[in-house]
Every structure is written in C-alpha cells, then in structure tokens.
Length: 77
Image (cartoon, rainbow, N blue to C red; front, side):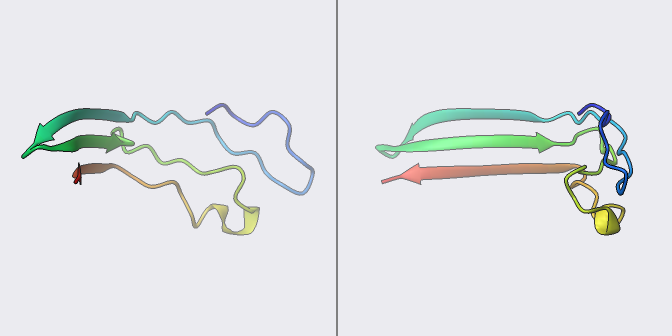
C-alpha cells in the first residue's frame, strides 16, 4: 500500500507497506467426490503494517496480522 497523501488535520499519516502473499490450490477427485486442496502463505516477510482506516486512538495497538500459513481440504459430497 502507498503512503497516505491526503490526511485530515485531526489524523496522522500511516507509512506505506508491502506484504508478500502466496496461494496455491488444486481441484482433485477424491473417492468419487470433488476435493479442493489449498495452501496460503500470508505476510511472508512478516512486515509490520497498520491500516489507515483504523481510528487513530487504537491504530498503534492493532497492527495487521503477521506471518501465517494456512492449509486445508474441502470435499464436496
């Protein structure tokens, strides 16, 4: 995200940030049913970032989520 250019007088600007996300998925047939297998990597650089739309009084207390990896299988019967 880019740094804020237009900030109201009662707020402070937030710095720009870049997060690196990756997602891989595959649709398979498993035991005669459709299976959706996925792996997601979120904020892989573990970048500290803040959302500019969060109110200023709690912005410093609520950073965006850190590094995470999610994996799963969804089977449709």
